[in-house]
Image (cartoon, rainbow, N blue to C red):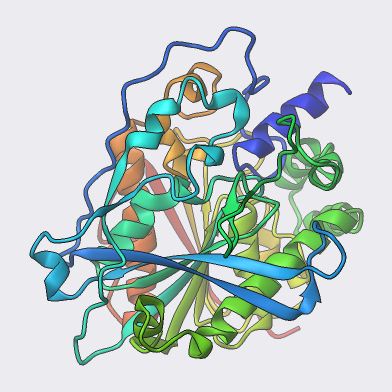
Length: 430
């Protein structure tokens, strides 16, 4: 196994799509760096106190690809939402940051990042949801391939504080850790801390992704860009299987909302959801999942992708019946790589570029610091500033699409020095 493949695996274990997240090097350093100070999770900016709960759903019609015969696919949901007045009184226990425990941190990072296990969130565990007359707009979120499900808490808590119910979907066996209904913690790692073979199959398919995306971004014609993208996508059998599995997970979670016990916190939250105002978003492979989900499921009203490049799946040859926003980091050779797909597909396509960022800067990992920063996995933007920018982009976009509120940023009336915004009119029908 060459250095390039080892690097790609290391990047993927940190939640990156493809091999271009920066010169990270191997995750399991021979001499672990000194432990950074305990992370402080930024406070939510919205007016609502927030609650969080979890539940599991099982697809009786879908066998689990990664488990013994006879096992059906089981998916965990971590929900964030505005809490009832009782939670605002300060009663209740704040939820732990690592909802799956220290197993969420890749094995080679657990020693230097062990302090993450003591971090608490701003959400009250199992708090009752708000009982306001107006139902809650809904966002479904997916983490990156090989990502840590809790590594987007700062963003999801903030959205909940502004009135959204956020359903964060944990894709089992392809995340650092997931918890089954019986309490068993499962992982993409085997008992020796090594990635499972099926995970490696996907990573192997991305071996040429950096150079292919660089060629796409250098190509001056849309026809040439699409030719390169189609050629690359045609070779991604395992990647496409993962994408369809994640889209099916998303549909399953929504399909089973009505089956949750009515007297449970999850059931009470489900009764408060406005399914006519539903958006999808994610980071890396999760962002790609949001695009494919919105293509296939008419419950989606708008989609957003945080630096998942390229857009795998079938959108390259289909129309997307809803608006879409793509957020690009400043990864070399990747900015704009999916534009040819989104411009032709989306009802309305908006693009946001964020300077001085790398792939992981749109997650809480920018707050983890320590070994990630030392190995070049993070951009030069200050962690608090990167978090603020990500929150602003995501909140304003979904406020515009699901609540009808104007977006100063996307309309060009608010300027963030690190951000460039471009909007594209709908393409002519094909």
